[in-house]
Amino acid sequence: MYTVIAIAYRLSTVSVTVSALEAAGFKVFCPWINTMALLPHYSLAFGGVPVSVPAENAAEASEFLCAIHSGHLSPLETEDCEADPLPALPEKNSLWNKGANLLGYVLFGISAPWPELALSGEKASP
Image (tube, rainbow, N blue to C red; front, side, top):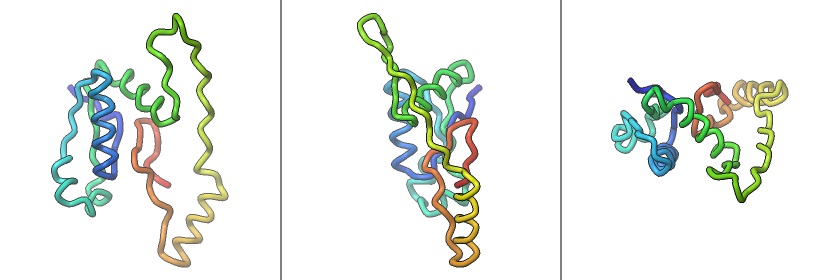
């Protein structure tokens, strides 16, 4: 049984995500990657490409992607190294940003871009 840990909306993002997970030793199942390669302009309409790993490895793989996403990877062996504390992620969905996004959509018909990679536990909205 596979569990979806992320959804990617660009071919380059899904390729890098799958490569990073496979390089870390995770078995990855990524359906619809070929459809996205042929019809990249439909990726948002299709709901993105789910990146899945076996259910028993889902928590570890999700933590690995979150570490990459935050820009910090802790070393695997900490005998000779000291791990830096994880940096705080900036708040992207403040009330001001949501209001500006709504105003831009109403006035110009343009919304803020979606994130390229939606990790599990995150909303996939701007």
